[in-house]
Length: 231
Image 1 (cartoon, rainbow, N blue to C red):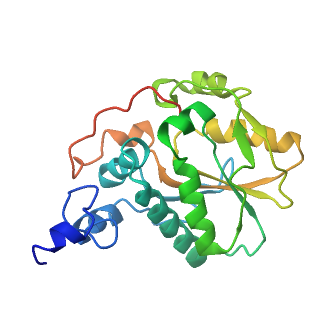
Image 2 (image 1 turned 90 degrees about the vertical axis):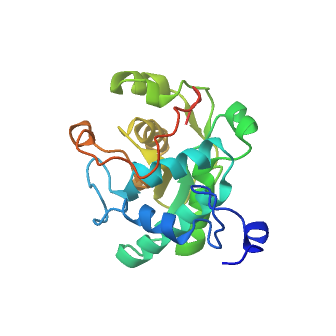
């Protein structure tokens, strides 16, 4: 790679080396190490379609997507999820894809909804209908990562509302899946309107507490904790 590449090609968001495809080849290989092998990853309480585990490079990539304006990461993660869906899913139903929304104040501050970036690219890959404004967040909430499971549920109670009614069953899309509290709150709104949730699509699934202690040292330094913003 010549010296002009350092000027003409955007840098990899993880290592700052020139990268023609968002991530440089080395970082992309490291991200692939965090990819899950099963699809769906879980089936209860709903099918969970996750691209990878929230650790190492994938954890840092999502942090940069959410807090450092790296929108390209969201689109690429959505493409990867779409490829997995086409490769593994036997479902050929005309599902409607709805991203988990941000509150308007958070959206104004960030400038975009990371879940919507992922869901848009996912739909471009799969051909499924995209309904980015299907749900709205009507109440600002505290950052979920700071709360225990019960507090997470209470935090999201009444946080969502249905803005556009989909004509088919729904796939919900988010960046990270932890306890399922966010999805559960969104599902309640859908169920009240008689809309069936058929699955959840996320870029990363956090590791259960029992396995986190066994995780290898991340390939990059652990990023600083995000500011207390809702996700």
